Amino acid sequence: MATTLSRTTHLENKARPFTVIVEGNIGSGKTTFLNYFKKYEDLCVLAEPIELWRECSGHNLLQYLYEDINRWGFSFQSYVMLSMLKHHLKITEHPIKMMERSIFSARYCFIEKMKMDGLLPSPSHAVLDEWFKWITASCNVSVDLIVYLRTSPEVVYERMLQRNRKEEKNVSLDYLKQLHEIHEDWLYRRSIFSCPAPVVTLNANLDQSVLKEEYKKWEPCILNKIQ
Ligand code: DGT
Image 1: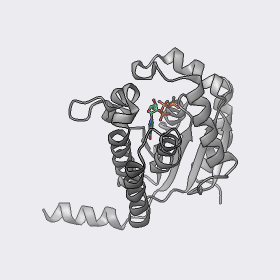
Image 2: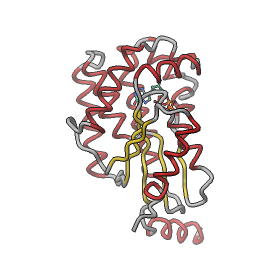
Image 3: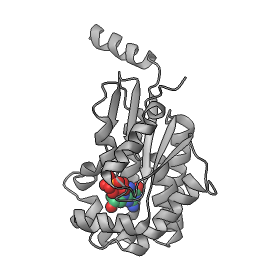
């Protein structure tokens, strides 16, 4: 018991890791990016908890979402926020934490898009927004760097068709175009919301072999090696 307590205290007292969030449209290559950085021992890599969303006490929330957004949008977004919060708060002994997406893109991109499309009733939006405001004011969800994998909607649409995730079969090019614009407004044009950290933008349309060179170029910055 004493050992458990002293270990907890030790970890709580440790400095917060340098936290990098990886953002970009559906199919922009976030998972590939994370996989590339897994080789570094200094890093705690947290992939998006999509498997949790597919298996919430036996319910595939991602599937429900795409089948009937009006009915399931609120439940899905509540669960996304919870799973993202867990990642933000996850204690690690690694000096760097890299997360796929964040509570910020859940709120600023996906919840916002549902609201714009009239798919999230105003009271449901208000409740999610209150949760978001409370979490960001009361919990340490600070971020040090955002990596924006910038793509064109046509490219990610092709990738999405190729990967053929069954839940995404009804996701249209139009939807990806609108989601792209929201990411652009937030992370590139910086015209909506605030960025919780400086943004590094990578051209993620590039072919994998070339893209690796881009990853390498940005490595010192991403690994917090710049003095
Ligand atoms: P990648 O590696 O860049 O191809 O990333 P994906 O496409 O595996 O991951 P992501 O986060 O762009 O999308 C996963 C699926 O979950 C996709 O169908 C969109 C959906 N999704 C992710 N986060 C949210 C969210 O906060 N709200 C909604 N409505 N959908 C979300």
